[in-house]
Length: 155
Image (cartoon, rainbow, N blue to C red; front, side, top):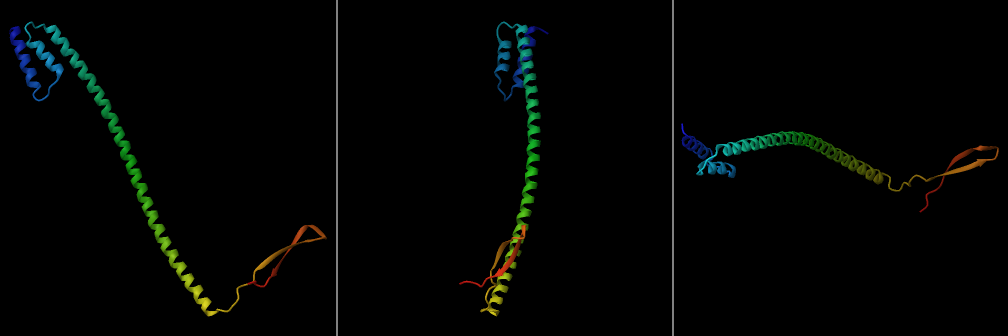
């Protein structure tokens, strides 16, 4: 096999591999192959550099993919936790609404009972206010005596 055959096979393989994808680096290799004077050491060096660069890019992509998967897992865990909190809060809201409705019914019942009692005894005066009187007893300096005085209701 001659050098010309090797160059034409390599050029054909490169053209076939870049069907819809255009890459400047591959085009540079193809140009070097199809040029008048072909020095395979330069082409091999370019290919080696490209392979090294592609390996580095693949390593970077793999590390980014791992980081993205980790971030996605954390985000999904956070979303599940927040969904759980939302459901607990929704349940608490429903319980509170039920409690509020029950208390409102109890208040309505108590108001109705008070109105019924007021209708039953409309002229009955309210209970007299109490006033607390604190007096000091001279014979016991440390003790105080408390007595309740009933005062009549003032208008």
